[in-house]
Length: 444
Image 1 (cartoon, rainbow, N blue to C red):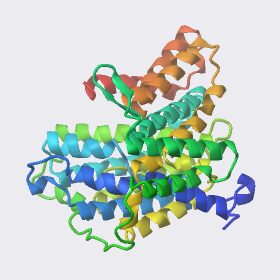
Image 2 (image 1 turned 90 degrees about the horizontal axis):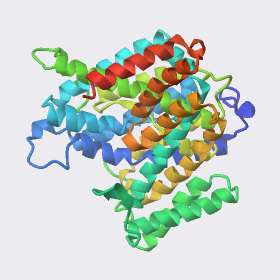
Image 3 (image 1 turned 180 degrees about the horizontal axis):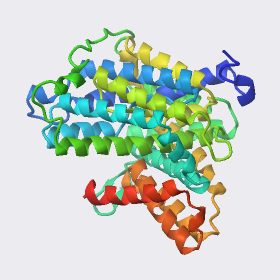
């Protein structure tokens, strides 16, 4: 086992991998609650039941998709990256495709399945790996730093430290709010632990924050330890229903949906893989080892999730929390997969993993990820512009894919203007054109 996962070469051990896998799980366990709420459209009143996916079934599908996807990633690609139904993509699925477009959720699942199969074919052809390896090192560093700012922004939002302000878009939240104060406490504790160089400081900080929340009645103690596993029957296999009889699957509208799912998942995954691998020190000579296997595992996750009954399953940037806690190999992903399976039976315990508990982890991980800023040559304007736009656009547009798109469009422009056009890989020119067309025809 140690030899297969290269423990000695990567300077890790079972304890670090277990702690890293557990930290990753705790950092992304919120998806087990948020995804069912989103896909069942619980926050939207007065809807017919036919438009709502079954909450319990989606909960099981979410846990199983995360467990199986993470397991494939760990065993096949051997990366400390966990998978689960993606935030953003689940909102697009529920609120845009089902609620706004009026497409049945069964048909929407078919779209997810198709996008996953297409992504799998692109991976097997080697195209996805070639694209990732064609990205210049400076832009890879920018992507990592941009995602760091993005998840820090999410952490501040989840903590209530940053809130919506109609006058200036965002502003300082209510620092007298109990949950916000709990998150601030968690940040202080985690910073102290990390500064002292304590291994697993992020995880320990989450535990201390949770205990403090219970003491001050900000977090409810679990109502039970073990809960019954709901039936997955309402959503299992529903993705195949649209392939029979009359459906909205073969329409221009649905084609746009599938292309959007493909685009966002393609570049969100690429950004996440590059960012986490860079943080773990796994990128060698500007190339991602076993990138094809990692991308294949990600595609498998989407296909598996669609069959089970959930929106696009993708690589999670919260895996960086596990890397910060010491994870370096796929064994950590296997640990995370095991906890997702256990979550099926211990769902009441998830009540203690609240936003104020996970927010400090996201913020501190963001601090660690922006270290890649030092690898970018800011003295070269042709490099500084696309790098900066990639970094700043991610949190401001609330999209990893959009940040990548903007930076990749400007990269060939500045390089050509500087007379360095020959240094650009042909794939980068093609990507720039694809991104421009995407902005024109898909996001209009």
